[in-house]
Length: 349
Ligand SMILES: Nc1ncnc2c1ncn2[C@@H]1O[C@H](COP(=O)(O)OP(=O)(O)OP(=O)(O)O)[C@@H](O)[C@H]1O
Ligand SMILES: [Mg+2]
Image 1 (spheres, rainbow, N blue to C red):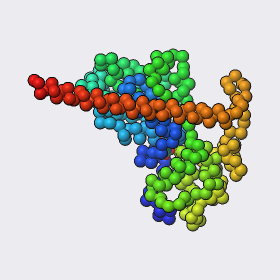
Image 2 (image 1 turned 90 degrees about the vertical axis):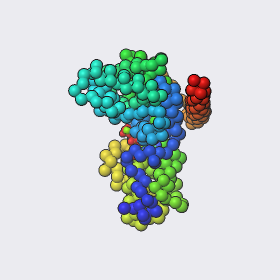
Image 3 (image 1 turned 30 degrees about the vertical axis):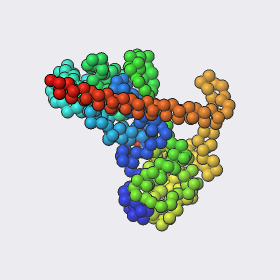
Image 4 (image 1 turned 60 degrees about the horizontal axis):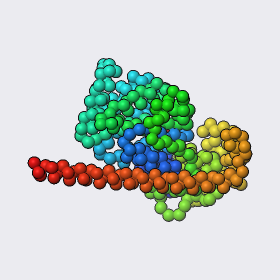
């Protein structure tokens, strides 16, 4: 409706997790690096957690889009599956015939399939989305599946993505065996105010928008305060803001326009009343209270420590990125060497 008015060739703020619109915020980039690192390790579990609507499925879809040919990937979005149902679902996602077969039969077929993949120089990856819905015993079954091995290397690798509730599940005392197989885990936080701004600009640009910004600085602040930097909430709000702008024939969307739309959507989105939209200082408004350590001591110089830890996280991210690139490079080198070796061997024979 508003697309042509704002020079767009598609809707920029759809709710479906479209990898074509993937915006690499600091946290999303980090989660992607972990997943890629996990892929290069070819073993163990990678766990990504994050609040509702922070972009877990988007990350999973982006990873699947970029995955290399030698990896056969399957994605399951699980409701509450029993261990038997999980085995059945995994097998059918790899296109194995499971109809009327017993669990033992399915496991056997799965093992043969994974072994054959391995023989072709390929490997299997299972992406489990909404993993917070998996009962403990089903996660345990997932661990059992990772026991299929050949020459000490697992034949199936799994990534788990889930909401925050996944964390206490994995912390349960009887999950120790699973925990020891986690090679990396990370938590997706919401976007900072600067990231909200570039997220919006990025999506608009990707949908064909050119030229100067549609929003005033104050508008971005309002958007950040209301959505708390959660991408899905940003999308819902932005769609309505653009519609409002179109109906009101606005060329610049300022804080007044955004505040009007927020008032409208607040009740439609069933927002709890505690969400305050301040015009003064939206950043401070999000965390107004002093912060405490686990044993109750107030943390002084919160800003200083946050910045310092932020820098530390960035340095670690760089190190991981570097490691992933190095591992990928070594992998390529080894593959090349192996091919040369096979060729020389064939020539000799
Ligand atoms: N990094 C990102 N780049 C572009 N769009 C994003 C990003 N992260 C999230 N989104 C958008 O936010 C919305 C919610 O994302 P997504 O469905 O991936 O969240 P989720 O964490 O899987 O949510 P849930 O907890 O409900 O499963 C989607 O419209 C998606 O396009
Ligand atoms: Mg999701």
